[in-house]
Amino acid sequence: MKIESFALERWMTTWETQVEYDIAESGILPLTTNDLLDLLPVAERAATLDHLLDTRLGYSEAPGSHELRAALAATYAATGPENILITTGAIEANYLLFNTLLDPGDHVVAVHPAYQQLYSVPRAIGCDVRLWSVRAEGAHFHYDLDELERLVTPRTRLIVVNTPHNPTGAILSAANLRRVYALAESVGARVLCDEAYRWLELPAGEPLPPPIRDLGDSGISVGTFSKPFGLPGLRIGWIAAPAEIVAACWAMRDYITLSPGKLNDALALLAFRHRDKIIARTRGIVAANLATADKWFAEHAEIVAWTPPRAGLLALMRYRLDIPSRALADRLAGEYSVMLAPGDAFGYEYHLRLGVGQDPEIFATGLARTAACFADLRAAGVGLRAE
Ligand SMILES: Cc1ncc(COP(=O)(O)O)c(C=O)c1O
Image (cartoon, rainbow, N blue to C red; front, side):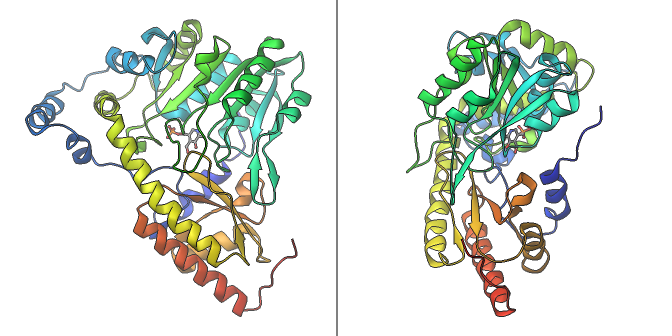
């Protein structure tokens, strides 16, 4: 398979080990194994640690442990463990789904901008991919359902959406998600909804829609422990889908990663059982960063504007400096040790992607240094674009 380069990942890997203030990250400040164990009562902590250390590191149950699948299944309507496949992150879940559901020539409608996998893998399979653009009005982004209606045809096999949305922070309301689902059903298509940012409602945001799996068998949900749980290093995600789709993805996975890591599966289950506490921690970090960001954007309104994410952990900020986003992001990383992702990796020039999930001190310093970079550029004669 020939596939286009994953622009954002290529850029991130250039800088992520070199900068001190990474405020581009799409996740929440990760937990340690000790943090996870500390969620347990003292007596249980020691026994759980022993159990983990004594776990024989053989191959694990190929579709993921029954306990983890049952626990996740219970978060969806009419879903059992046979409807869940544990995968190596949401990225493997999406990859398996595209490769089992799609054939060359299939008509696919995929959200754009997006986590690039969501349209590049269908393109690499040879599908006829139409992009459904998240509409930008100034610094505000929203889904345009009328536009989706124009793109979907009787040939459409799959609609690919992502809510809450990476990179803009837009969300589909419950009513709009139902509209997407009904539209897919009306032409016999399926909807793959990347719900990597599930459980990430924000203090002043909007309520999240139900997972698409709850709307019926034409809906496929993809989830992950990376974002809401702050555990991307576990590489544990999942598919929630009709049993025959899960079985097809599992059969394909036999050739790729075979099964999830045993300790990772066990730690994910531990995190899941204490998800209320983990999600409360996540919301605390995000609330602190949103307060810092609100103040910062107000102070620098002449240069930058944003709409805070309505859910999830990401937003695109729009800036007026007359410098392309790649050059600005490289300068921020190379000279100010700040990572903000360049909008051109998403097809949005004069934007930078900001993540609101990092350590609040790192976040505040990262923004302060960004302001210093803007001031230095202005002093060096970089002008402001007319808007
Ligand atoms: C929308 C979206 N889907 C999937 C992924 C992949 O996540 P995972 O770490 O679970 O593979 C990401 C990671 O940034 C993402 O933003």
